[in-house]
Length: 563
Image (cartoon, rainbow, N blue to C red; front, side):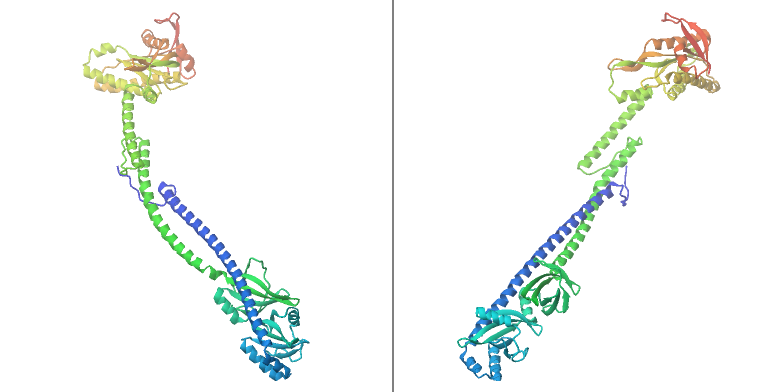
């Protein structure tokens, strides 16, 4: 038996569900991996950037301190130079300015101021202030007066400068030497090469930031102060997202100078994006390979299951001879072997049932096959029917054996059919006599009605047989039927090796006596008063009176069934 069907995507099928669950589980696993990797990588990247920003802040501060210290030492040495003091003693601004320019170049400073002890500017290399103007950073000189030197980050012409101040002593301060280096784009670019972090210097005033130097090529000159915290913050600049840190460098009543240290978030995630694409390609390849493997597995697993399902369906439809062909040696293969064995056993049982149904009533056959066979019975209310052919012995003497058996078999076949059609149990054949009953083994509340209805049908069927028999030249005979209702013992009677499902009791004997009583009254169907009480509303009956039958002490009222 070949059981083949083409694979189609139908979710009600086991194969499709198995394929769906395998691929779904893979996609769920890959999605979880993507989610975890994305979360962990972003968190680690953010932590790494925050650490880089903190390190850059420390490097920047250390750089300013070291250069300020170096410039302070150089400035102190210059201020102590005897030749420079002699130049100052000339009080000639041009000479002093030339000497100061040479000193500035010697120490590689970007700017130089010489300030008198009254805080007036004597020389300005940047020409930021006029001679005799009050020096713009008097607070810085006052710090130097207290400490001997001082340094501060200030804005000069919108450019940040790191200024240092030292006194020119003779031996008391006769002037203040102020040197500085610009903290401009070039300085920030060198720091970026070292740290790979973007740095911008801004001045803050009234919640507004003013740009003065930056490593970013595009940066707004003025922008609103973002919400910040010590750990860092995200903000957008020129449509690009940055993770930033805002560091205060100098602060005074007029505002403060800050450094904005930041790292591009998109650039920081470039490696992750490459990894993400790589994982996506691997995932797609994995899904493709797993889909093919799952499809093969689904076909491998579902095909024998489908064969078994079709085999079960065939058995359910009564085809017990179906055999499935499963070549695998696994559990499904063993299941196929067990299925075939089950089919063989069911076929044998069905053969037994069919054969048994020819020997006993189908109801009795089902009763015997559905439980363990045991001797014994139970008392139940039943209706017993006995039938016999009038003068059958005399007719049989006029026929040869083969014709007699053929005639009898034809008669018994039709009568057995009527008993089965009316839910009766054929007990036995006794020559031409038929014994049947209703109400066991299957419960039947209308057993009396069914028995009387069957008796009428048997008589009617016999009348129809007359026409066929007359054509064949066969003899005609009449049938007498006796019916009684009452309690009897029904069950398996006999020996352990051979038994018969039958009925025993006075109810059975009375039914047999009523069949014979038909001779005395010229009737075809007689019923007892016990049966009559159960069918009087359904069938037309004629009371014949009381008779005393053999085996009974009291007379029994009997009735003839008319129709």
